[in-house]
Image (cartoon, rainbow, N blue to C red; front, top):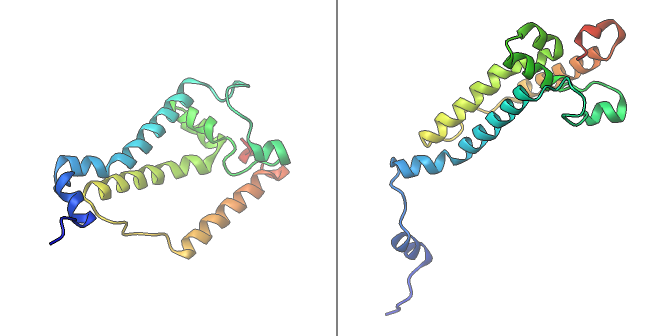
Length: 155
């Protein structure tokens, strides 16, 4: 008889595994979403405290610096700053796409946290048609905000 045990049996006996509904198991599953939440909250706090309107606080958008063209994200930090200071009109002026996308981003994050807490896999993935539509919307927004007649879309 061999004294050698299989790696799977050795691991589960010596280290142990968390019981699937235990606090340790849930905490382990929520590590990734928690880390993303902390980093996201820190980023929002930074943008709230450090005004993007003041030069030198944030790097220049690489697309704008290299091409002179506003990308779909240009003005996003200023929009977030305006939102956190209770100025939704100014935020919409800075970047309407970022402002309109924020509720969906928050919803997606909360859905991710819930799925991980309940140990469920992703149940929804965007269809190719939805993905194509979003890409087309961003492309149209990018073109329009760089045309002379649509300066109200520029940040």
